[in-house]
Length: 137
Image 1: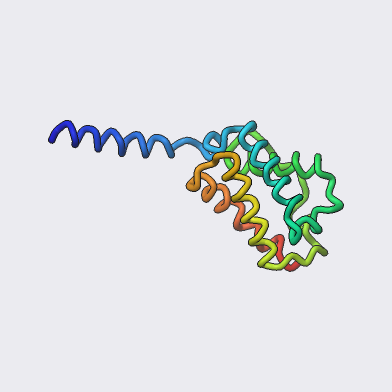
Image 2 (image 1 turned 90 degrees about the horizontal axis):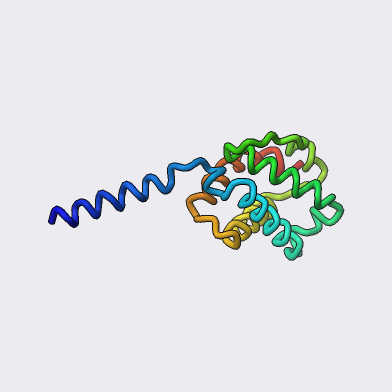
C-alpha cells in the first residue's frame, strides 16, 4: 500500500513539474517556435479561405514578426518589433469565422510540431486579446 501511495505521489509531482516550465521553454524555445511558425505559414498557404488575406504578404517578414511575437508573449528573450495588430489588419475586414479558422490553422501547426494541447492553450490564451484588434477592421 505504501509503495502505491509513493508511486501516486511521484506521478503527481512529475506531472506538476512537467508543466511548470515557462511557456517559451514548453514551446521548445526559438527552434520550437520557428517550427510552429513555419507549419502555420504552410497551413495558411493551403487554406483557400485564409490564403487570400496573405497572398501579397512578405513571407520572410511575416515569419520574423510571428516568431518575435510568439517568443515575446511566451516569456522568451525577444521583443516584438512589428506593427500593431490593428494597423496590420485595418482594411482586411476579417470576420469572426475567418479569425477562428486562422486559430484552427495555428492549432494544426502546433499539433504538427508536437506541441501538447495544454501548451497550445496557454499560447492561444495569450493571443486571444488580440482578436478585437484584428476582426472587422
